[in-house]
Length: 154
Image (cartoon, one colour):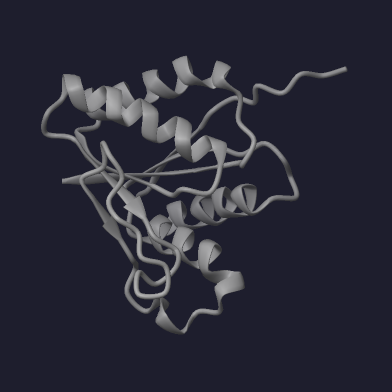
């Protein structure tokens, strides 16, 4: 079973949906990805979840898991509609809350086979995580797909 994680900016346009949907379809049909994991704190996360939910209708063996950055005891989180479950990474209990999202995302990069990213802004946690994954990819086989920016230039 191959796992794909998503990372991206809080701001992501709806115009990204066709490219994101096509990448998810490619990951399922060409790479054999059956498990997708997504966070919940930005627009890119919600777009990714929407696309995977649509793909699940065409590919019943595909699962969608919600990554929890905060301990479920502190912040109870029922499994949202369309998701197959939630996941709280081991060892996160001692991580300060201000670092929880970054640490949970890093855990997923370390434990995923594929990463689909929308990270164009140079001074962002999403971009830093993509760079971290690229470094990890040199010694560990993680395939990274960075979606092109949808930014408008003035």
